Image (tube, rainbow, N blue to C red):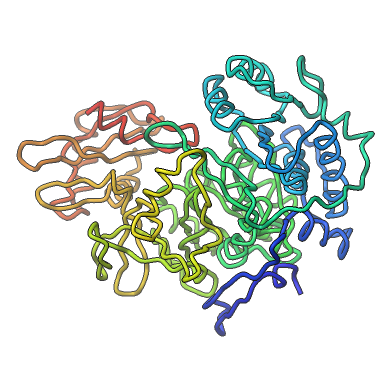
Length: 544
């Protein structure tokens, strides 16, 4: 029996497809004690984490190791005055210390704030002020200590500063401090409803919002790991994500350990598809999850044999059907798309036991009650675009959905207006019960009386061999209200020209309904993006 089965009830059909799923947990559930320490007790030598980096260093950690190092780190934190409810920021890239720190903070009852090393000083200042952090633990690389120190000074705070692996001026060496710390740590009483995790969303408009999840959040990722990513007992799961992003929580710790899979971590700075596939083959990765960009590069650069790989999944941005087709042709593995938000866990996916459809978000997770609704709150029929909303259970508590926005009750109440959670995402369901993403409601283009989602036009654009990256927006048009404009980044071997513009238009418009035709093409060298890599369409709309 896998440890996850203690905490849920699941009903599957003869194909292993999930039909019903619910959680059961004690009032004081804590992932640090009830999962990590329990696994260390039951299976001390079981592999939890396989870590390597670009310098060919390698470390393999068992659950016994994770218990030991997380306890040592928890003792260092505790002796420095970090207590239940305190907020601690982690800027640790893909260093293995992240896993010790995450579990240590969960055990203390402190709130973990993951952040990317790519943040600027002003980004750090905003987060430090907004969250009132008590401590920051960071990498010694990429000038992060210098940026963090400058930000703390500018924010006027007095946060305790730790650095891992080496000394940095103004920081205590956490790695050295751990060496003399006790390997035992007495259980701190926490509640399942306590805040556990605070993510700042990338935000395509305005300042990032602080999204708070409680201690039930890891359990909601059982479905993510088992039925979408298909991480398996005794397997090795590899999600490509830096620890500063919510995707790391989806694919690098909680659900994977709950279902009995080890986690593969490759610590790198610059993405190289060949290195990723080398890691997959060297360590025998069994399940893999990456954003579509990674698969695009793999398809372009050539995919080697990956004999141990049993399952591949993707999420986070548009996946071109051509990439799906070529990857599947080469590997025999369909790419299973999934959908969710920083505020939630997995909401829809091409789940285990069902035939994946290229470009579709698949079907609704049985863990959630999800509907598509019109602007007046009515359910939308098949084929019509509606907003994805989550209807909470009768008791009003939906694990997996965030419990608050940081110091912004007004915004929280707004997204929960009418008693349902409004995702702000537009989608439609087809006659086969498959769901299709249509874009953010803010991004919907209204042209000639029709509503067009940028996603469907971008899908066709990506099929053109010259297009490496694209974004579709609506721009003012006296005749149509809005005209459809394609902003395109070309491949290195292509140069902008009027001829290429016409060729791309013709290529796409032959495949699109007339009301979806691209009227304008603009070539750019790069897209305006958020720190997490999301294209800022509102910036492009302002630029016209």
